Length: 114
Length: 119
Image 1 (cartoon, rainbow over the protein chains, first blue to last red):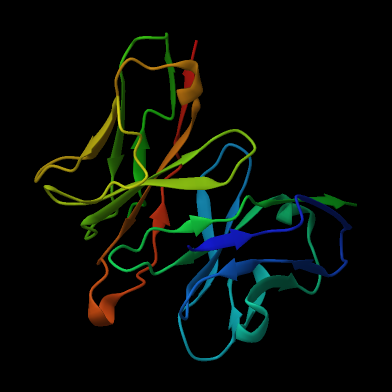
Image 2: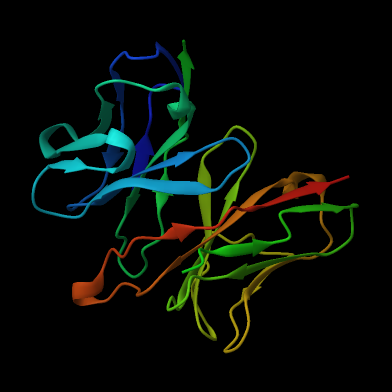
């Protein structure tokens, strides 16, 4: 069965520091992978996605993620965090047999200190 | 181009009442997905609909929950006889196409959600 694991429930970084959020998935074939961000009380905004091709994908707000098939990972990175990046980040996998329902991880809450 | 619209944004119901949540997909989108987010958890898939068809309802509770997406109008998620455990945020997402051959994996765009509180 498909599953997504985000090992870090809560991460705290200083503004300007680099960031890496971990995501591991379990899926039998090449998955479609997504990162979404959710600000408090808001909906989900797509940061980036991987369907095929170049394994390093660029997203909005300066985020990038790298698909590593050998490690079943799709970690999200940003070289320099801004205070406005504080939010909840969700990794998701798609592409089941007859539906594109997404399977979400439990999320990582990011706090940014000045 | 307006995004996915959901209303109401907040809904309070007493136990035993009915809750109706509405979702208007983005213009040109004919596929709708409903997800539920319990407090401190990630989103869980509930149901996938196309116009007038339920495609996948594997995530829907067997009782009290139903969903529809009529030919005209928004998609509706209906919860009958609500209980406190139904308190959650319910998100709708839409995509322009569904899974089929070359068009698999269309991005889902999420609405702002409806926060349901059952007293």
